[in-house]
Image (tube, rainbow, N blue to C red; front, side, top):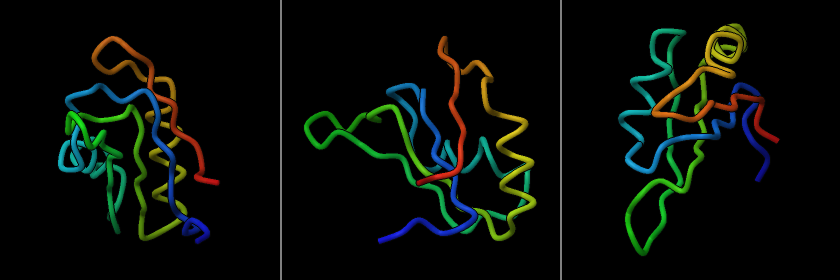
Length: 83
């Protein structure tokens, strides 16, 4: 399955991050279609990355520019178009 055109990969997430927290981090930049953190099944902690989908490409680009490289819980976020 190919990613949606307005979907961003988000890396560098802390272990305690969940999908609700990820949505909260990105919601100020535009209307979200979805936010999903990839979890480790054995611990139910974040694997360090997730995906955020926006309704518009403009909102996705605004969020990418604002949050790529931002520090969160001691690590730098990597925000890029999902491939």
